[in-house]
Structure formats: structure tokens, C-alpha cells
Length: 206
Image 1: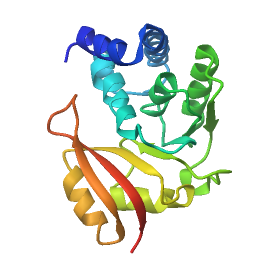
Image 2 (image 1 turned 120 degrees about the horizontal axis):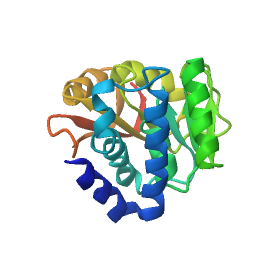
Image 3 (image 1 turned 135 degrees about the vertical axis):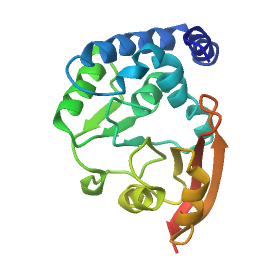
Image 4 (image 1 turned 90 degrees about the horizontal axis):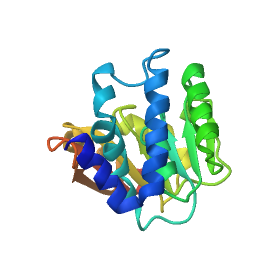
């Protein structure tokens, strides 16, 4: 997928105004790259295909989620959480422990005027939400069993988990099922054909 194709993919599904906000976010990401390593420098020229569509493809996977918050764990540069916040009219909480990344996330939220977004500076283990999350996302944060264990207190039986896991998605699901039960499905990534997205529902300890 080229950058032009990625932009068209976003525009066709979410509209021009959301595409324009993502373009502003892209400019902020590129500017901040000189100050901290938010994303791999080699991907700065392929932001739309490598990061934005990669994040946006999670949105339709949560089309039947209950009303409530999208919780993004270990947000880093804001992927996928900020992309979801731009594309959806849903409250989003970005949980990130690192101070400089939190400062960047808050700057983007302010610049893009995203009133439904909260940036929480903490590890997810220490975060105590007022209400359980409707959706949980995490990109390259931890192995699946560990991620479920650290985040389960933020969820309930209706929560949908959307977890890009790369080439090891299926093997991580098999390993996690020794400790966790629920409905697990691996969705192929549209941006990286050899990668998978773990979609899980009804997750609870065995």
C-alpha cells in the first residue's frame, strides 16, 4: 500500500475532515522525531501506510462494542489510540508512563482539539478507571498473557480487545489460552499480510 493509497483508504471510510486531522498529526509526529524516538526513523516516510492505516484497521473490528471508553495501553506515539480518537466520536484514554511521550500526547490532543481524549501518565497496572473499558488496544507492548494480566482490572466481560501482535499472533493466543479463557480470533492485517491482530471477547482467568 502506497502513501496515496493509504490516504485514500482513510478518506473513503472516515471522510476528508478526519483525513485532514491525521495529516496534522503526521506533521506533529515528524516534527517531534527530532526530539525523541517515537517511531522508527525508517517509517517516517510511510506514516500513512505503516502506522495510520495499520491503526485505523482496528476501528471496524470494534463496530459492535458497547458504549464507553477506548483504552489504549502503552500509547507511546499515540498508535493506535490517537488514530482511533481522531476517527471515532468515543472517549479515549491513552495510558503511557514515560514523561516525554506523555507531554507529546498532550500536545497533540491540544493541537487537534480532541476533548474526548484523556492522557493518563502511569503504567496500566496502576491505572484505576472510573468505568470499565469497552475496547482495549495495545501495540507492541507485551506478550499476550502478560498484557491480559496487567490490564484485566480495567475490563469486564463485554470488553473487546484489539491487539496487533505481528507474526506471532496465533502462537501467543495458544500460549495465553492455558491461563485465560474467552473467544479469541486472529484477524489478518491489511498492511502486513504476515501479521495478525488478536481480537478477544469475554476474557477471564481460567
